[in-house]
Image 1 (tube, helix red, strand yellow):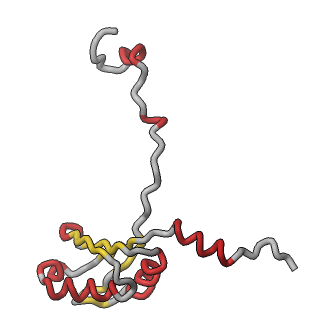
Image 2 (tube, helix red, strand yellow):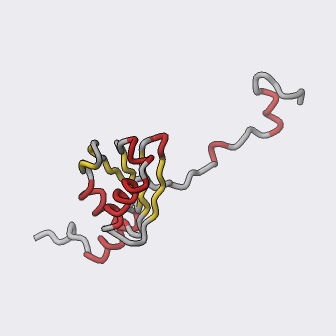
Image 3 (cartoon, helix red, strand yellow):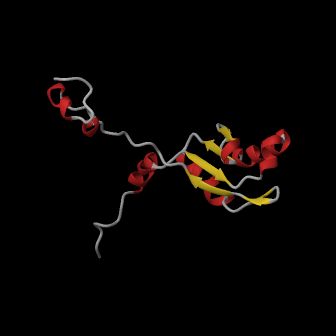
Length: 125
């Protein structure tokens, strides 16, 4: 038997730190944004996975961002509420992509002695 490929259960729990803690909800009916009662009803659905939850309503995109305190709560919400029928539309739930730190090493301006090569030149060297 090959035991090298089996992972330690503790390692799997630590891997959750890399998972997103937010869910993006799309395809929300436009009338939901104008009705506080409907908004609260939708928020309550997402609160069933964790009480410590924040909501960002993005009306112009017809979207809602739900921020959880743990990746597990976000995963449960994503799986259980995806394709749910809510007020005349079928909502979609997606994980929000976590921001990865960007390396700015490739985005620095050229050295001052080389800036005269830029067209059009800003000023003579």
